[in-house]
Length: 171
Image 1 (spheres, one colour):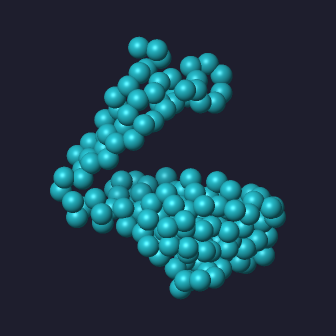
Image 2 (cartoon, rainbow, N blue to C red):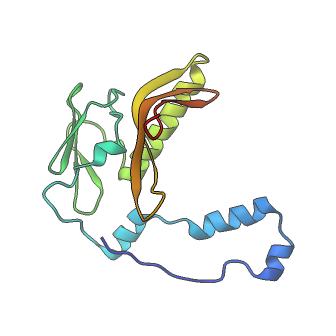
């Protein structure tokens, strides 16, 4: 897609001298905030392709209709829940068209934010929450560019910590 950027001075040296770190953080968050869906709406950019939802289940994995996890199946421009049958089509503008349920979200960012809040609520409601999943450990390459696999193991997550148990560089 198109990349557009603008450069401007957000804070001067004298402004920084009179601010604490929280104030600077808030100003920077506001200055760096971007809404690609508003930009798309304003500029009319359209995504093209035969597989618009391909890869979308890497970030959208909870069905908003039945709350099933990992049951969303991408096909062309459509996501379908294999558990409840919910279907949503992603348009070339990056927005959603809901065909057989209420319209839950307008675009990916809203769905993703809902998932984040939903998961947070589930975790906070369960004091004994824990989750384990098989993972591949990856790190930036020692030399050169990119990321390399350096181990395999299990990631255990609870309300207190994340723990990786597994191999690291063959050991």
